[in-house]
Length: 116
Length: 405
Image (cartoon, rainbow over all chains, first blue to last red; front, top):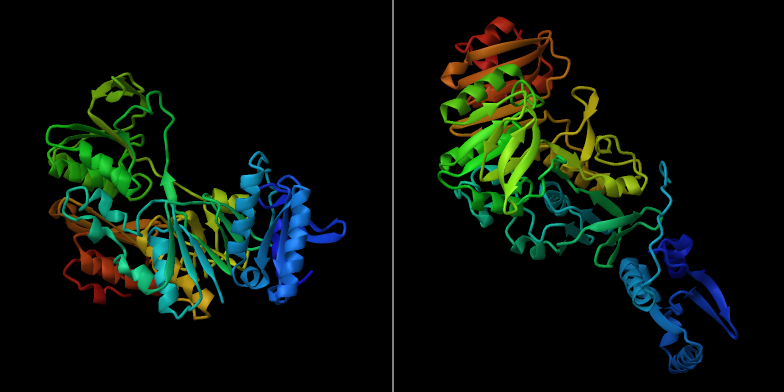
């Protein structure tokens, strides 16, 4: 995982984000999604600088349309946003999953004991 | 890019934001407050504010323009619901997620509630926030009958203010004396007599059994011995509890307050806690305590800001407190731990005296009524742990500078 992906994964793994389960590097042939929440049918992609080129953005559009046909929406976040303000990035993810799957009950989190 | 998130925008949280800028913190600061108000001072709520001698603007900790000028982002009317310590995130009730490099918990305390039959009746109030004070103010008027449950500082300050506004006041106290948890017996007797003189009535050794109502509004307080006191308004002032649940749920050690060290840091190096919500070390006394006071909150705000910005921590302070009632100014320095004797300086009947709490020849605490020199002098001697001569201390003719042993 890239540094921005690692930063998100620390917050998403273990159903920590309001009880929503995320997988990373989830395959929907022929694509691999950075993060995927099944309950919300949401793909979260972290786009590096390479996604700015015309070629890349055509590729992204094809891919988003392919997933859309399968009922999966894609939330694209720029790597720089994730690195500079991961709170803002997570706010957008949380907003999307809550809108798309409001029924997922927040799970009681295990209590951490002592320092990490 | 070092982001500090402050949860709680009271005296502690608001001051921490200001100290961070003062100490040169240049990264983002986000201040989250439960009340829909800019940080304000709570002490006047029971005093000048209640008597309409101070308005909303005078209550504010800093002018409204201060926050924009200092690039302090405000999230008011919001609480944090959860902290993710691993990912260093705070989750707000409206769905916003804030990442932090340092987190300061300043969630304060809340009024302790009594589970009484009739406790939900209208005009049964507590006093913690400006909104509480607004309701109290609206209910106090000449001839109105106010029953105050709890003879602590909040109760007595409101009693004095309510008398000034012409209301009738009855204080119900469970202990045999008022101020039982927070002052010595000499002070209790003195305040009791002073309030009596101003027309406040007391029932001691009495618990409230129930509140009685008419048309959904409280109309009487029933005591456990069956007596009832008719009233128009009830104020419950029986202490405060730390708002520590957020920290507890995040696995931070709490023991009657979030446990912090001399830098106001919790066991998690990225998380600080300050103000009424903490159980903090008092190096001067070699023990930890939860202090509910503005000076302590300010001290810890400085400690946290210093630690975050890499400055030297402020030197250990002598805790102090104050209360204003009628024309009395009570100032307390120190905490009376391990006290074996008292020295009284001045005559209580003159309403100008000080009570020194002694451990051997060392002053542990001083309670000073209208005696600023005794307060200041005592505070210095407490901080220095300097032995004094009890005889000279007891003699008001000897200057406080000359009581040293």
